[in-house]
Amino acid sequence: MIMHRQNPKDVQMCVKVDILNKVQVLEICETGLNFYARVLKGRSINQEIPECLTRLGLLRRTPDNRLVAIPPGLAASGLVRPMEAVIDRQQHALDAVHASIYRAEQVYRDSYRDDGVQAARVISGADIISTTLASAVESCQEELLTAQPGGGRPQELLAKALASDLPALRRGVRQRTIYQHTVRTHSPTLSYVDQISAAGAEVRTLDEVFDRIIVCDQRIAFVPDPGEQRSQTALAVEHPGLIRYLVAMFEHAWERATPLRYSPGAHRPPLLADETRRSVLQLMVNGYTDEAIAGRLGMSVRTVATHVRKASEIFNSRSRAQLAYLIAKAGVLDEGVGN
Image (cartoon, rainbow, N blue to C red; front, side, top):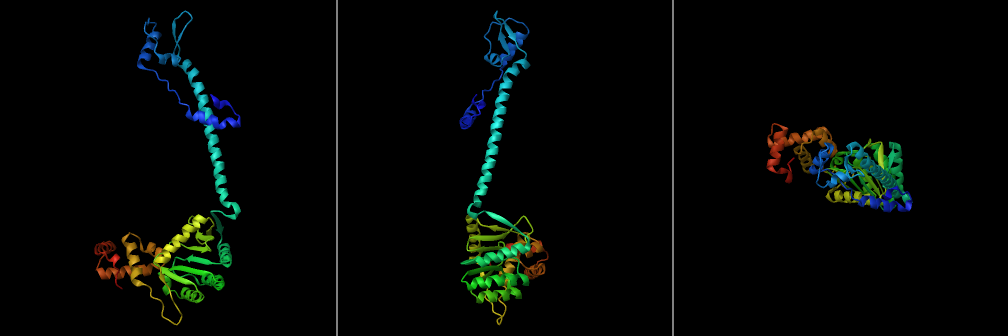
């Protein structure tokens, strides 16, 4: 057996030999068992000894040519111990492979950190996240992509965003932002949209936005950490492949979104009631609760209930289940629902 050699140069050869060696299975046959039983009883036997008995070490010939039956336990010790030794060596070899692969895995992951580039790093704390985002936007030179789900944004967040977005726009950065349709009735967000639009930004809205995201120059992206408190932990993504994926998701949403144009002297932009109600009803038919629908579409539970109530009046339904059935049967989700 080659595995007993410990020279490092022989490791690869040892592994190959051990993997390719075939284990010879020794089994006793019925003829062998009967033969062994007759020898144990001292009966004379004229037939040839079955090979399985000699290979298993259960029979031996004495110098005077007599057959002697060996106790199975004694025979086993001569067979099992070498096999166990081989298994032990192979187990050690397997453990060494696992340890080596683990170390290589660590190097593989660390390689993404070469030249300051890594797959993602965690940013913890609302203040640190805000400061990091502001710094990234300040360093942005060409393009700023943002997607903001959840409806209207708090006044203080909009003020912070405006403080970094306007200087970027003045530097010639192209900014595109996606909100949900519900911001069309939120005055603070509309005021923010008016100011960045006047500086050259483009804003569109969708019924659903895939998730919050900020991408600067397709160089770094910020997304919420799904496994933690979203307001307290974010991921800074710097891996080029992941950034390309996130940008592709943004572009797909952008193509489907509706432009939002607003100025203080004009009426509020339309809420796109037909499209919004269609989204509410589609989620209701799919079994979502009012609370879940509100979370996905960035609106209040009361607004969701209002859409459902108006649809119930149109279809004259008496229950949520009946409404879902009538909507599906009528196929109105492909055609829209009246106000």
